[in-house]
Picture 1 (spheres, rainbow, N blue to C red):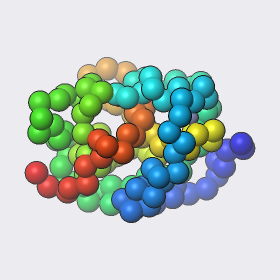
Picture 2 (spheres, protein in one colour):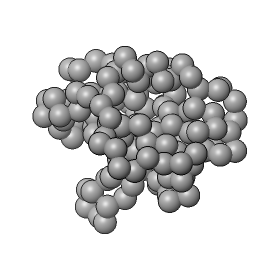
Picture 3 (cartoon, rainbow, N blue to C red):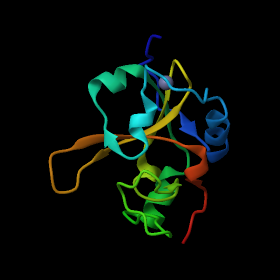
Length: 137
Ligand SMILES: [Zn+2]
């Protein structure tokens, strides 16, 4: 599928995002290999070529100013945990871009990580059961 490169970044509401999640074919996918992206992983050029960019969260700026670099881990998970909550109001989800796999419609979040090293692009598959939609702790 051709990529649309010259469009302004679309704004996606949390409701839009939830609808997107319901489009996913819940099968293995050899295109995106989502099973390898249960936690944050390196977002390679090859992976980028498999995904279509949809936009960024509409309330992104509000959540970034409210929660900054705070992460949300009420149950002892950490940044790298494959079962860490996908808390859209918190770092780094609130600054992520939304992408989908053209083959299976799986939804991914991607962002650039800058802390203490050269920028690294990271990517995580969104598993609906991990989604958290609260804005505050
Ligand atoms: Zn896929």
